[in-house]
Image 1 (tube, one colour):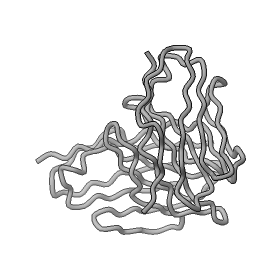
Image 2: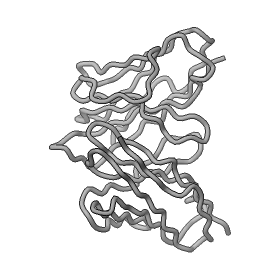
Image 3: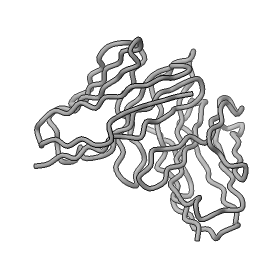
Image 4: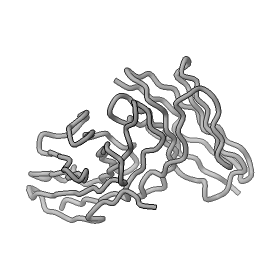
Length: 108
Length: 115
């Protein structure tokens, strides 16, 4: 099975940087996804990592260490609209398993 | 670009009724996942299909069934609805290429309300 852990909540100031950590233990691994979700809306794809290292996409970066079962999502130059839930999801053999999500609140 | 399409967007049913949710994946995506998400909860995996065959099953009640058709669209059938079935139901699709993929996109979801 899958066991995915991420912090419940994080708060940061507009313009700052926040790092959301995700640790996982899975029976199979075919990549790790990060999604952003606003309340009542569908998860929006942010990033995908299958090899170790850092993937950068504008203000968002995601890192993966397969040997440590660890990933992080880095949000830079935070904006108010970044306030949302961020979901770490691990793809096993035939399903995506989600962590409980991290609620990020950006304050002015 | 084409996205995952779900229908209907909203559905209101009475207890013990039946509901059918539809999902049309992104073209050339051969894997479909279904999720249920309650308020303040993370998405709970229900079931997945690869190439029209069920590939994995999660916490899906026996009252629910699903299938993927020849055109790759999928339907989630829910019978004997209960108040607790009220939730957002998401469908996601992805390609399956040699065990790795680079995208898994979600549809906008169907909000089911059981009264």
